[in-house]
Image (cartoon, rainbow, N blue to C red; front, side, top):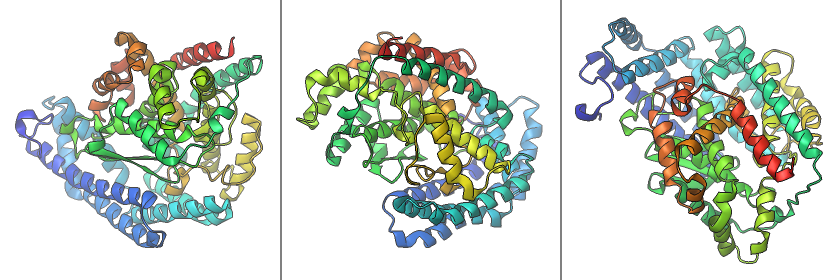
Length: 512
């Protein structure tokens, strides 16, 4: 219930009030779907896959029915006519904008197809999990082909000449292949430039220090301490484990994150938890007056990813984060695992640049090559230049070309990510966009906040969470990504911030 005294919306306006009622019903259905999806990834018994697919299909169908009804369409038409009189608040206008965007997209897609997609995605996730466990793409191929076929039908219904542009737009409104190509071309050039300098450096960094065994309970305890220091509210959230780390924002008072503990480096689950907590902080920080509306989410997935990459890399891998605080906490939880004199070696190890087969274990530099190769594969797949059956071969070839590595099996290759199994095509590019946004936000935060690094050293980072909450989180989807980044930093997206950051940081580490 939104009270009139503190409402962001014109709740006395009958049209806005009716639109909010529609939003509330859809938001509640999506929240239940999110909870069922979280359960499927964490605690659901394997035998319930088929039933869960039916349940999610029913919820997706109901949500689609409410959104695309004639009443909703007529209501939006009437509200659009009224917007010309300029009587609505900025939040009213955003609500009408986002509701219209959702309606215009969804009304073109038959309910049956929506339900088929939801069911295929649910089944696909479990199929992917089993295929990954056995490291056999052949076990996942048919399920993925089904999902891909349904996504093509979806694009055809909506009327996109280039289907991939539709899915890019789903995650980053306004983004197209044509816009992304030059951004990634520049990012690729920057990445290769710094890699050349690093390879030319005579400074060698040993990552063996990170390959020691650390018990899971200790890692959970340490991760929880870090999340608390970041300002993550465990009264409104929880941390669990899953095959692939993820975050689910069911409601600002109910955010679920997971990490994966069986990884190459013992620090990997910690950084994954920090990454997902960055997403969760964004959800927890949204103005509560936006709850149960389409505005109660991030401005875009790129902006959302900027929050996870910001905390994971710009804070979590920084020297102030570990100095005099979390490194000692790590030693207390794992006595004998590391020694105090190894702190500098530890800092170098967690920032070492060394190509890795696994995206989530990759360093800040080569990570973007992982994203670029996934973007190129998705782009070629929807352009008809690549077939589902050829994905492992194409993947392995690009890993060899970009990272110089040989993929030994499908689990460490084409099956490592969960995204395609749930139909999440077009999401990968937002990770690198998030890196670019994060660098710009980091520069703005350091400019605005006094004694930035000294305060990070103290281990209580609520001051930073509050700055992010005021600058980014609380607005939800009220503003579009380009508007929000300019409000927060004073300029539109500027990749120069990322280039400056990585050349300064890794220049110091590798001595160039």
